[in-house]
Image (cartoon, rainbow, N blue to C red; front, side, top):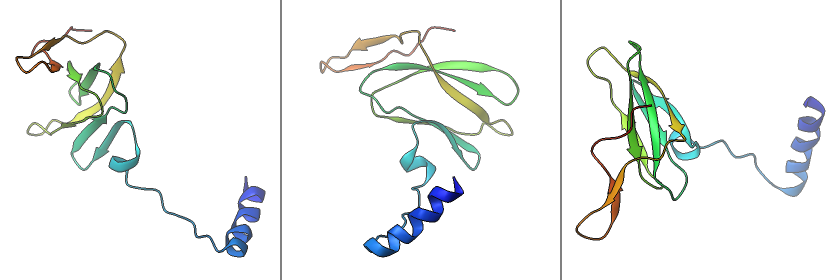
Length: 110
């Protein structure tokens, strides 16, 4: 790997390119990430999914996530969500009065 990096840097200089820093986790990452005491799950697809999350005290819960969305998981007093992940069980959704598909209030327990 060092040999490849050693070759890439002079190539940038010759071509007049600059290395670009990676964007922040919230801008670049799909799935679970954390910023401070708030956790996030970013869904990078056009589907509804079921997400399971775990609190630092061991309790878990599921929630529906819409297409191309990010869910914040805020701290609850001293407790924080330590992870959230996709679950292959379909979420409960319905069509609202405006004709738009949305997540139902209750979701499957998995």
